[in-house]
Each structure stands twice: as C-alpha cells, then as structure tokens.
Length: 84
Image 1 (spheres, rainbow, N blue to C red):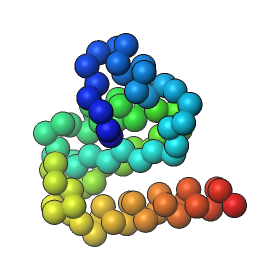
Image 2 (cartoon, helix red, strand yellow):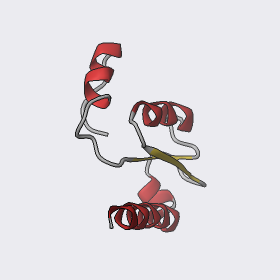
Image 3 (cartoon, helix red, strand yellow):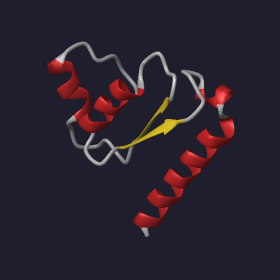
Image 4 (cartoon, rainbow, N blue to C red):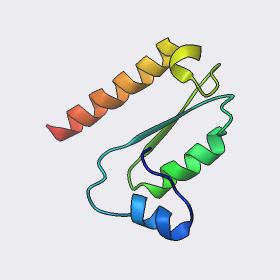
C-alpha cells in the first residue's frame, strides 16, 4: 500500500478512484497491524484480494517466505490468466 491514509477524505482519494489495478493485500497472522485492519483496507479497493500468511508477524517475507511466495505467485497467475 502506498501513501498515508489520514482520514476518510484521504482514504477515498487514495483507494476509490479509477486506475488502481488488481491488488493483493497480505498480513501476517500475528502482524502488529492486525489482519482485520489490513482486510478493512482491502475492502476499500474494488476487486482487491486479501490473504493471511500463517505463522508470520509483520515481516512475512522473513517469518514465512515460502507461504508468502506461494500466495504472491498464485495471485500473479490468476491476474495473468484473467488478462488473456
């Protein structure tokens, strides 16, 4: 996610606009940001997907790299397949 969301107006400007492509949000199961808050952001982006990485905290790429890689690869495959 890029940018800083400061309130409802900023959130609307960042997420609910044309031009945001297919988006994947991930959160570690034990993430300090909490999976529920990340899922809330995902719901703000039309068509976004959300996945929880088990046995991981905020550094999912360090805590459970194999699962993160699997989730990202599956997402990319689905996006590429739907583009053809």
